[in-house]
Image (cartoon, rainbow, N blue to C red):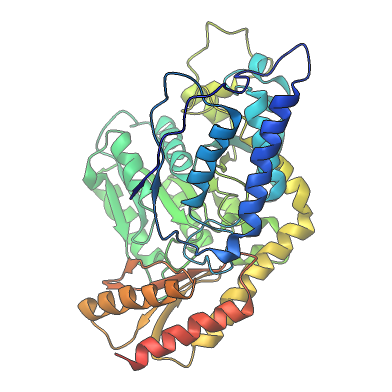
Length: 469
């Protein structure tokens, strides 16, 4: 790890914007920062997706504040050591390039410094959040009165959903609660139960079928067993887009079981729910409308800058009834509840701004085109690899994982590590998840800059790796 040399103390740029006059020096500073970012973007293809060196800037402030030039030099150092999602070969993770309008909105959000804790601190942005979450929930089929709240990441959205579910449960105060989810559900579900003070055994995983989807027959047996034993079920968590292969659980069958047993259905759609915004692609994530609560992460594929997650509910008023504590230090809410009473977060930035402006930039046609491009790249890579001795695992979305068919656990670990390094040497980055007892290579095809030549190059490296085994 490289240790950066501390910059020399110089006269600092204005620490706060002037409310009485323009500040040309501040404008120049922000313009220079923007220029450096644009240059970092435009040179992205010249660097590897994964930096060769991790840098460590001087962490502590000096006695005197730095000049604008020194601050920009410090920024450049961090940029030079940053992960590079703009690169066409960045296919490892659910982290696409950022939408340019979303970046601009992030800057303005920081500059406005409004607080969605209460309407008085963010009058227009609080209304915008309510309106946009309502629109999103309605688009995804949750109903005309649906809505929700923005959150800093899907893990927090999943946690809040389960807290709301417990608040609705007659036995909500007991620790003898069970949550059923797929064996391939995201790790945030277990983490949520830990935060809620529930024992590890509260989380019961249900087997998946050959396509990686939760098996309704096994869930039916588990729910029946819990009912016979008198164990209260907090919720069933279904997944619309699993982390490794992008599988979508059969939501209609799961919903029928939940309705029969009177159980809350939460759908973790952090990866796949955005496909429901497209008339052409919503069939890939059918029956989202059956959920009581739904997690959506526009940051995963649409390029909304981090963080951007939404918790949507058919009955959004349950948020305030669950999390409302009153804010005696604020003026009364103009509506039913302040933003800080509709979730776990009190003070929070207006992250809704970058989602709103990013969606306005894309339009519905742009959203559709992004989704279609991701699906086409997945299909193209799958076609390149289909003749090779690989076990491929995928779902209907834009993720594809694969491992050699004839290899055991130790062999696949060595193969995946060596092949990933060979790919990185050609500036192609895939991830290396451990799944179903073996290491795989995984491609996430949400990067719109990834070209057909990049996909062919991935296949070529993989083919050579298999001949060398």
